[in-house]
Image (tube, rainbow, N blue to C red; front, top):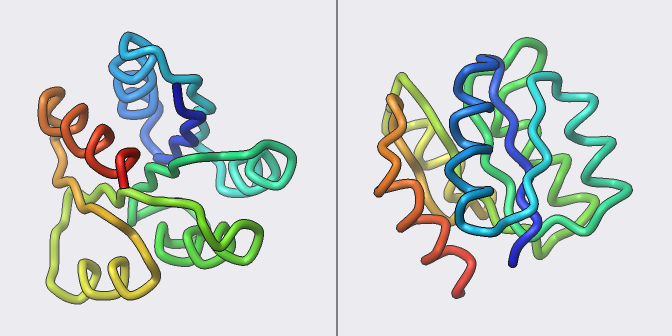
Length: 119
């Protein structure tokens, strides 16, 4: 199964996503701090990053930009509780494959992860 990095500034969201994905057999690296997540991505081969757009110090889009520098082939799903056309455009331009709106729907998340990992 896949190695998935999850980054959200809300611990409950990180725990929820981790539980959902671990039940599907994925190895999940979960973080609430941007630096820790970026460090993890530098020392592990990550198949997919699930990033919240609104974080503490950086935006999820900026984190995606950094991840792409480390591994241009990394795939990403962006999360947001505040969907706007601009953030969707930015995310897709940087290579995010999907976009999920919070609150997270378990079935939608599983479906999008499966789709992105198939590509």
